[in-house]
Length: 283
Ligand code: GUN
Image (cartoon, rainbow, N blue to C red):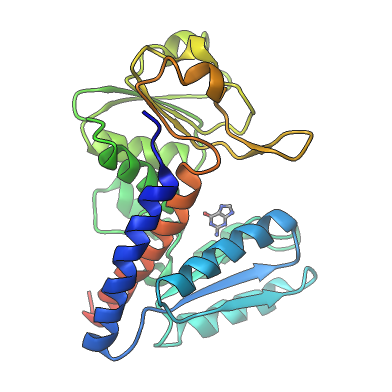
């Protein structure tokens, strides 16, 4: 089975569009997401375009704030502070990576935790690991949603996550744990990685290396979630999984593009609605 993230994402956005119209009626305004981009990295530009498009599609307020590559850290922090203090702004996202002269840690921590739609603020990260109410990071949240929608049971299953980043590997492992999977976090230094992965009923690949996960990594019937975004030499977008080789072995698999990627943006929309509701209801 191919898990069609694009289709699932579309139906979730269609539902949110209707929900947002109802929220506008009820509360007298729409959820508002502000996206900040610094410089003109082409990949970042393209991601941000997708986020703004989804914002418009779902009927949110908000727009893109474009700052030049050489903007000072102080100016960026001042811009964030302005948005933190704007009662009509529900969500703030600063597209990463940032130019080297700006501290990403400082910028992430500067965003008000209640408006941190990425779920990157240390307070949200801590709350996730403490099982407290928090904003979940979008990609991990989207992966769990895809598994749910595809009817993949997590409770009692073995899950292996390859990759230990703060944005994907660690939080997705935590969310799988919360669904009562038994979770192994593997990485590039794991000994006999293929054998470890072959134990998995659910395999999540988030390493950033094209075609790293071959058929020998996959237990027959396993659900394979490909979080990779890699460009081949001829500019084609591919994941971390050798899709053609793994497709006949896997029980379910997410394609790249059209798998996890669209879900990340859709969960960003979900988080914006949640931030709006939390703020409107003063939670
Ligand atoms: N750069 C790559 N992925 C992301 C993301 O999910 N959020 C932000 N803010 N920047 C990113």
